[in-house]
Image (cartoon, rainbow, N blue to C red):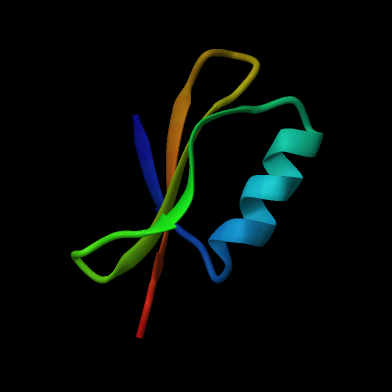
Length: 54
């Protein structure tokens, strides 16, 4: 599982889905101060995309 900080979780999630990734958890604001989504790519790697809310 890879945790990657990105500038915009929603944009990167949409781009990954367009490239064939499957959303495991849609982008949402987490109580610990991050916006996060979880994806699985076509090679079955799981990615957690994160952006700080502040």
